[in-house]
Amino acid sequence: MLDTVPPASRADRYAHFGGLTAGVLLSLYLIDKSGGLGAGALIALPAFGLCAAAGVLLGAYITARPHGTVRTAALAPRRIRDYVPPRLTVLLLIEAALLIALLATATAIGSPDDMGRAGRVLKMACSGVTESHGPWPGSFYAGPALASLALGTGACTYALRHLTRRPGDDQARRDRAQAITAAWGLLVAAPLAGTAWSAAGSLRGLSCDGTLGSMAAWVLLPLSLVSLGTAIWCLYTLVVPKAPRW
Image (cartoon, rainbow, N blue to C red):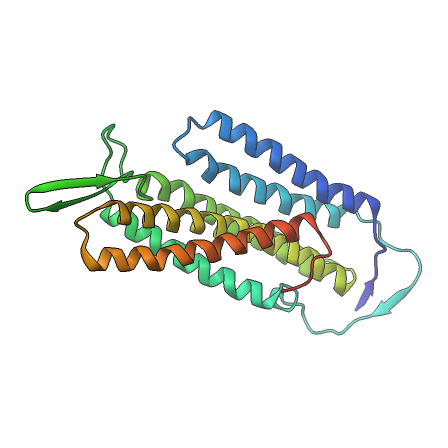
């Protein structure tokens, strides 16, 4: 099979940063229109990530194909895992599993707040007294977060499949696959950081949750910090297309 090597394209860079700009503007608009309570961030983050991934994919579409040098490539089919950054991908898969497990647990034990919004507080009864603390990442937040994760995962998987099959230079594929992986990483790491932090705060805010609740809070706090670090790295990778592979 013949595989051409496309040169760096100015239009490709414009598409990349155009996607980031569109993501920022759309995120700010969604946060402004969401009505507060933190739900806006759950909508804005996927919007930003999807716009960033769309910019990368658009750049691949509009990059001019060369009319000069042609090289041959192996007949073995290309696989997505050959182009995504291995360590970052493994870390994000682990964090995605933790996010789903944490949201499912929080939904199961969450309670409605004083306005009847499901899953926004954690309640516990001790010695005839009921305590409550929030915001708790129950169903009020879990629903949008899981829906965004599902939508973003499907979109980013489609983009990776397309980029893997598209003719071009292997290094260009790796750079674009890394950017799309980072876009998906924002959909995973940022919600996990917020979910773990708010859950830990609610657990520590209750005086009768006992040793188990205190231990869970101290496990969730470092998880939140690690996830925040992952989210920052993913954002850096999106803003700096030539960021080191990790």
